[in-house]
Length: 443
Image 1 (cartoon, helix red, strand yellow):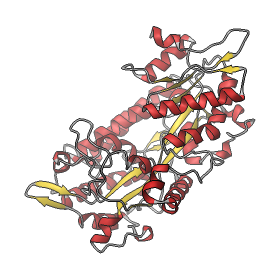
Image 2 (cartoon, helix red, strand yellow):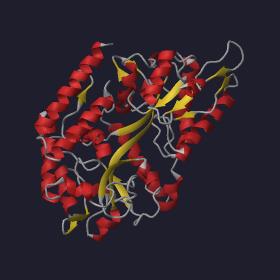
Image 3 (tube, one colour):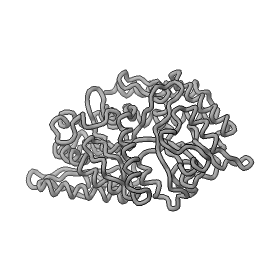
Image 4 (tube, helix red, strand yellow):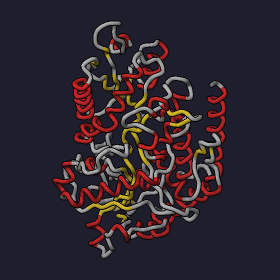
């Protein structure tokens, strides 16, 4: 903590302002990109000096370290935050940016997708900027589709859950009791993501997980119970009724290798035909050496039996100004610069979609251009930017992390058949609503 405190902000009464900026962590290229952004900003503001960005807090939890520095009065002047800014705003730990946004060059309210900005809004105040908003889509192996005589055109991809489920069955294969290949995995398979993607599945089925306007969780709504019954039925039909067939299988389901066992990603090795994943996979698809196919494509999410319209979701990189920042105005000027010019540099390292509506959409991830060509890359990127217009509100609860844990537990209980959907979702509902009420009562 002493070393971290030494990185804290604050300049003297004379001389250049020392502006500090933190990152929760990330890859070496990500950290390098943000240092480059700082240097570029300094050239435009000779009165500001920015020491090297703090990139992570080692073995210490970033949020805990950040909160301790806010309480001590020596936080960074600005930071990227990998949780909803609302969770800090509701406890008075992040500044309200509304007034500064109104007078800014780049960051007025109407410059941000409404669904992405919702993750920063609470009680009429805005506690952060969703600098990037990578959007979700259905990714699919177009080569495998063609091989089976299935149309690989985006417009022909399933529009409903029933169609997706039927198509998934075409790719399921077994060797005795060992699952070899799948079409689409049911909830409960991708443990690290399901508690977030369930928000999208709920919206696709005409419901929601959290009603921010009324500060009410709706986890055990009739549509959500029906949604989990639907996935259980899918599990029974295609995966012999046992989620462990998926969990024990050798492939690492999804598009990322298993960090523990080293198993390669099932999607790139043609063990999995389809998945729900974000736009960032345009770069990450090639991070694993050796995809067994080249022709992938993306399509909108299909609508559930209780839904009426296709939606998307997002996973932003949020920026906040801690409540006790010593230079809040200069920190906001940096974030305003970051939202357009800075993200251009960021994008050159990692193809996170700039969320600001003025961010240029003709910047293309070089690795995708190299592998698939400029025309395809631009088409895919245009598709993902279009999804920003239909983002369902996510990440907008004051108890976001707590709720994610409860949802993860509920999904596991349901898909392992240790609790019914109604039981598990009701337990999660009660826990989350009680936690929310307690949190809000302490404001």
